[in-house]
Every structure is written in C-alpha cells, then in structure tokens.
Length: 414
Image (cartoon, rainbow, N blue to C red):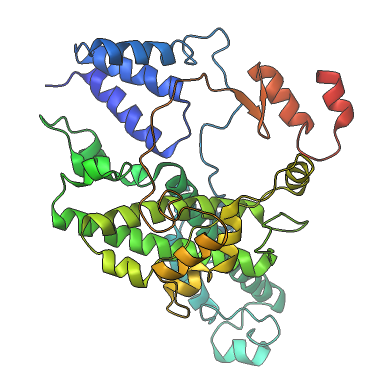
C-alpha cells in the first residue's frame, strides 16, 4: 500500500501536467516520491535527479521564480452570473466554478431569456427587443422599458462573454497540448497507478517513438489516432481564423503591427506536436498509402521584424522551411479536402528549396530527439535571460525588453 505522503506527491506530479513547472522542481518531486516509497533509483538516475533538483525552488535561498508557473486561465463569467441572479427570478445564486463552465453559462442565458421572451442568439438591439405592446402581450408589461433593456443588454453581453470564454479555453487547451502533447489529458487513475510493468499507452500520449508505439495494440493506436485527428482539425480552424484576421505574408512570416502573433504561434506549436504524433501513428499502423495522398505540411511560427532584419544583416535569411510552407496549400484547406497536398507535392517543394523531406519531418515522423546535457533553467524577461528572479520580476513590471520604449528603466536596472 502506498503511503499517504507518496500519494500526495503523485497527486502533485499529476497536477503539474497542466502547469508550467520548472524541470528542477519536477526533479525534486520525483526524488520525494522515491523517498516516500522507500525506493532507491539506479545510480545514473539518482545522479541526474540530484543535479537538477539542487536548483529547485525548495533548495535555493529565495525560493521564488519570476516566470509564470501556470498557463494563463481565461477570466470566467462569475460577475455576469451574479448580476443575472440579481435581475432574473429564475436564476439562483451559483457556485464560483459555474462561471468557468460554458454549459452552465449557456443554460443560465436560455433560462433567463425565457423570462423576457428572448430567444438565444437574438442580440440585435434594434430588431430583437420587444416594444411596450409586445411586452404587454408577452405578459411582462410590469417591466419598464429601462428594466427590460437592462436585462436584454446583460444577456447579450453574456452571449458575447460565452463566445470569448470558449475561444480562450480552446486556446489554453491548444497551448498545453503544444507544450506537452496529451500529458494534461491523462486521468489520475492512469497516471497514479503503480503497475508492475510500464504503461506504454500512457507514455505514448507524450512520446510517440517507434519503440513506444510498438508496445501498443491496434485498438490503442487507433484510439490515439482519433484523438489527434480531431485535435488537428481544431487547431487548423484556429490557424485559419488567425490567418484571416491578420493577413500574414506566407513567404516571410514576419509579424506586422496588429497581427495576432500569440494565437498563431501557440497554434503553430500545437499543430507541430499534433502532426508529429499523427505521422508516427499512421506509420506504425502501416497507413503509408494515406500519407501518399494526404500529407499536410508543417506550419512555421511568426518572426519578429527586428529579428528577421538582424538575420538578413548578419548574412542569414529565412529558414528554408518557410519557403516550403509558402509553396504548399494551407493545412486547413487540405483537411477540408478543398486542396490536395500529396507526399509527392511536398517532396517537390522540399527539393526546390534544398530541404530533406524525411530528415526535416515533412513527409515522415520527425527523428527521435536525443538527450542533451542538463542546463539550469534561466529567469526570462521576454526571452532575455536575467540572473536574479527578483530583478527579472522588477524588469517585467517596468516593461523592460517588451518593446514599449522602456529604455530608461532598462538603464536603471542594468
């Protein structure tokens, strides 16, 4: 039977799958778990864990990092639900968590709408409101024009809030998947189990190498493939939306003022992760002929204009993958079947720009990553390493390195 302390550590490790904890702090938790279970790791593992965990927050003097340890969570509709509860008799006071539940929010909007004879989606302030005569006929004549309008406006704002919340929750899911594949989706019952042999299906959620996938049954492979198929389509929709709103230049992929680069880059990273898993699973299932017909390309991240200019001045240029991307149909067009993107088409584009389609991950699962020497996680301010977390926090608050013209603040701190 696992000890109570060991179970607490496992739960903390499981919770970390949805967080952005530093490797040093995860190494510390793994050490704690070995100790709680009275298990001695092999010497190489023990040495590696000790090397990383000696810089964990628990062991350093300040015990603090300026970097976010959570993925940004959307702001829920708690305030709007509280207001609805005050204005509509059919809406009771709801628990705090209801504001983060889209289904609960929609149910409240529909239920409250019935009180003022408003259908869900009727948001035109000029056409969808009831006039005095219509309110009398609907049996709500006791509501003044002002009181009716107040309720109508609230429900209209709540529908807009619900749409934003769904979008932000989707973005958060995309960001987590881009960073850690399907790790965040592993239920505690699977993660917390201590089987006598490795749970290869769980490992395949994050590490789809041939060695790992070779241990899975066809049913397990197909189950993962279905999940990644669905996710690829969701990310493609997000990419298309960002593309249409911003109008990026495909041949340069340089950020311009007003571009939604955050959404694009998060979705591009998630696309790369999902695409790599999809390719690996299709290959393991022996579905190479499918890839001959449908081979959606990679998606590049956007580059800041000043970084692109620096590359040009230093004799460099755009990454060759950008040119291949520009030559191919957009991924969302391929997944919808509007345009063809065969393996031979991708190979031809790669050949034109001097890219190896296999080694570059364009037509085959990307090569297995090799382990590298551990390096202590730096404190970062907009991508710039800063030695001290307290200084990093002050710099971030002052806008240093953010591109907002904080030169005086930078000079003061540097």
